[in-house]
Image (cartoon, rainbow over the protein chains, first blue to last red):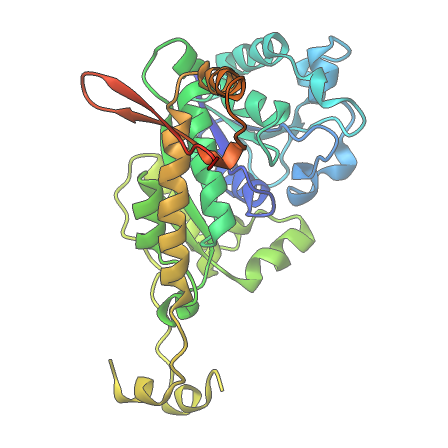
Length: 270
Length: 83
């Protein structure tokens, strides 16, 4: 049985796809057979972030509608042996994802994969509901910013009421908070919500804090999951998050401001 | 606080403002989330009944459900217009 993990947020642009790419790559790098599914029908981008956009032949909807087999649609990652990508359809209607269709595919993937990572679209509409419906665990990607935190809380409510686990009265979906685009300097200056603030408001366990970093954009420019930039702060922070997801106990890093020299302190923020 | 902070302009700590606003709105929305599905319609129908007798606007009505361990209390507050 595979563990099904949804990467969700409610709000757009907070780093769901970046996170899906890195978490799935991290799991696969540790030898777990992993598939990452793009649920954003009509606005697929996971393929671009994972550098396989030119290898897409069939997609998720093709498989649901029986126009292709799973094996035909799955794209094998070129960097990590045990990683596969199932791209979203770019041309179909969002409603092409049916509960039954998604279930059939997830069940089939469950037979051979250890982890199924579902990259949710933004919003709380059909595609987002489909992405979270079958989840065992949820990574709620949040920026330290008011609209993102509010939307995350909304998505938590939906996980607790509209997921399969909720509907069936099973154990609830296991929730993880992943705080991204975190800027310790601004937190220190009182300009940005701190990790503790967000934890206190959302009241779910913290999986990781990804610092705001230029490396993230540089990596996505090249179609490289940022976790593979293993010398960078953001890459290492994602690696820590994957380790914690697998039950390892790792201390949180990159949460305090860099110590600055005397001169940069005297002249900053003027 | 180190002494350099003393020279910085005394800007308001906007993160604290954000936190307070979020705590209020999130608590409010969570309260609504736990309400039974029929509540909005019940609210509309109760309003309709009241409107048969007095002219009231939506903002003159407060509709709240308080949950305790053993029971829930539906609280309806209507401000009647002056004659």
